[in-house]
Image 1 (cartoon, rainbow, N blue to C red):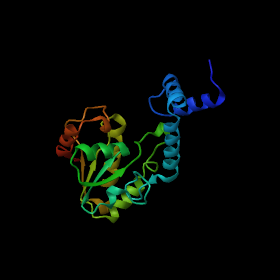
Image 2: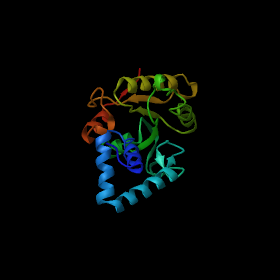
Image 3: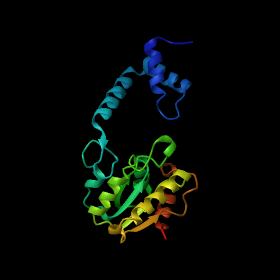
Image 4: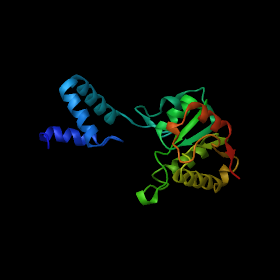
Length: 203
């Protein structure tokens, strides 16, 4: 069975969300149309506004409607420490649970040659330029403890170590408590705090 073309288009559009299949999208679409058209209108307006106005922070690359995001603009942050994460959701998880007060650099993914994601897509040229220009003494690599995350962390460490001007930077990796194969945004705050406290230097 299919609905009218407009309803079918709405259902298909909702399927772009992670974890939403045909049935879930159908329930969402019908709920909006039958019971909450006002809420649907607010959702559509908010979505359009966010897509139009939200870009990336020029310093850390996270989502921001301003050229420099709120975290990068805070003068009380520790400017000498930079934490590298895969996604904006990881920034939120660390802010909520790890007690980290430094700055961030968001890769927006991890190395995946089969998907066409290489160093340029992750902004690693921007990262090296930032490390060269700022007084950063420690880089904490907090990519996810997955095969891809570990490979990305190793690549970043090698990239930094090959730059003569960056030899004084201590490169560390978060350690204890984060389960192998897990993702930071789903790890509880206490575990994240432990992982940051137990970070280890690359040798």
